[in-house]
Length: 89
Image (cartoon, rainbow, N blue to C red; front, side, top):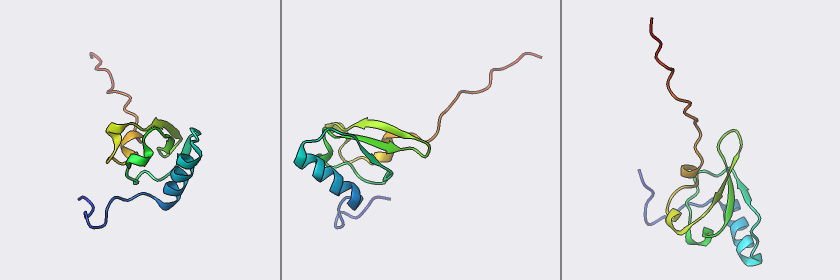
């Protein structure tokens, strides 16, 4: 279920503060975050983020097409290793 339009998008306050600080200083240093539920806003475009997937941090460079999506969509938490090969008996 989506969030109410009246409330607007959700961005973790700590992450928002770090992004605004990076925009002001024009820093390209990656920002580490555990907030997978945060929505990507236009201010994030061009930023380098590192999103935690439960085990390690995955790098992400934000582009225009990502605006409106959640950060967690770009850091998969499960690795599919394939099905077991069929063996003849």
